[in-house]
Amino acid sequence: MLWEKLTLNDLKRVNDEINELNKIDITNYKSIIDKKIEAIVEPVLINYNFLKKYDKCNGNIAKILKLLDDFINSGDISENIKNKILDCKSNLQEIQNNGINLLYNENNLSHLRISIVNIISILNFQKEIIENYMYSSDQEDKKLLYSEYLKSENNINEIYENMPNIYSNNIKMPNFIQEHFKNYIYNIVYIIKKWCFDNLALSFYIMLFIGALFCCPYFFKIGLIPDISIDSAIPTLFFISTVGLLIGTLIYVGFVFQNQLSFNILINIDNKKINNIIKFLVSISWVIFFAIIMTPFAPDFYFIQSISEYILNNFNIILIVYVVILLIFCLVFFISKSTNKFPNIILYFIITVYFDFFILYAVYLNYNNINLSFLVISMFILFLLKIINLSKEPLNKLIISLSSIFIFFTICLISPNFVRGVKLANYKDDFTIKKEFVPKPILNLPNCFYSYNEACTYNLTNEEDKITIKNLLVRVKSDGRYYFRANMNLKDDFNLTKSILKTDKDEDEKSIDIKKRTSKILKIDENTTKNTYFIYNSDSNVTEVKNYHKLFLNFTKDKNIGLYYDFHVHEKNIVN
Image 1 (cartoon, one colour):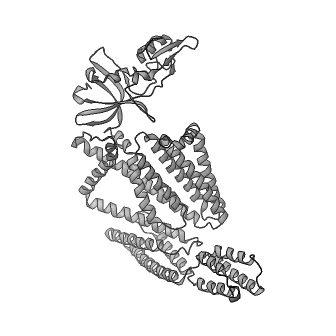
Image 2: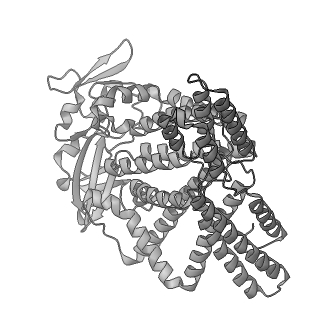
Image 3: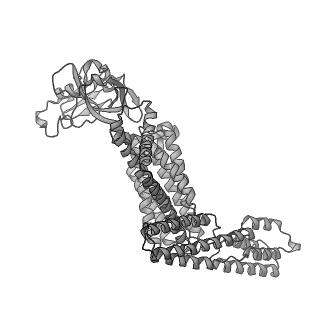
């Protein structure tokens, strides 16, 4: 159905759904089978164990059939009892062939009858709306009719979610349910859109507030409030809220769509063996996925450090294995008796891979700034969403609720990206600072060279009272001060070649004196008696640097980001 447009296709779908609902068998088969079961258990054979097992089947026909087979094979039974069992099995198989997998008691059936009557009544009302819509030429009237139509979709969707799953083998019913849920989402969007246009000013301020919320997790973590003028705050926060809501919407739509595809595929799979294979493959894929997610945080969980190291050393292979398992998972779908399976399976695979890789990318891009508690909560919610994706029940409202919570925590996880994207905080830049206000440990940073992209010193002029530091991380500007972080990722012992030491891409390596260049860039001497030094290897024409980290004893060492030094400088002491 197109946006704000009702067509003959919608009318046909409504008529088809009414016909399918009228076909649903609401006979009380349970009372019939109960009487046959009672007849099987003769007074002389009083078998309470059998009756208890029958009650535990909860009306599941497949389980009852297995129980009857086990009872026949359990020992000597009379020919009369055996015939009664075979008669009962025949009845159950006939019921099963009619598309019914569960036997419901009268209370459930009464609820089902009322639900069907209510849905048909609403569908007949929808027929009138669609017919009036198609015959009307008044655009305002059409908008009102369309709004009424979407409201009625909400009512139908709610009834379906509370109905017993008696339509599991009915090929068309899941498609109708999906259509109603899609229109339910349309109605939410329609209401939000209408409200926003009717309250433009308030909507604008809400967008600014949402933008501020998206930034808050980062600033809460560093414990500083950013300096930002009103003039720059408005476009910045509006942009952040727009991007954040777009990302949230994509995640939300993706989860809902994935769930609908999974429901449409699984609803028609009754083969127990295939269901077990699906559960097995899913379990393996989940273990791999969550292991990859938690790998950067392995040092916080010492018992998985070895697993972490293995994953990092074989990262590409692990990802390939994960994708292959998903492909096998989808292949199992394909060989099952799913309806319209191929397009649904292809879409399911694409969406699953896309969103899983999006989550992996978000975690690995931001793991230095990620709050582990937020990540654990997010992954737990994601785990629940993946479980629900394997359900044969239309748990649409639960999907919406969990997706909303997951989106909130995901936005919190990528908050550093938002503030970096608008250069509000958490970005790298070059600064020329009055030398007297630069901490002494910072002066030990290497001079800049072409292949190095962390904090380094760089002087274009010979002014000794100023120093330029490139690639400083601006954690935030607060209370007139820039809060910097200088990262240093060179190893303690390492080798340097002429190609590494080039000051620009086009510099001729032949013109480089490797010993002088090493000494100048790293600010150390050859074969010195000091703790940090380098050795020139004439055979390989490289310099071997030793104990380099001893120059940075005042730096903080972090298991994820290496060596860093935090300091702040007032903006009046920054030249550029």
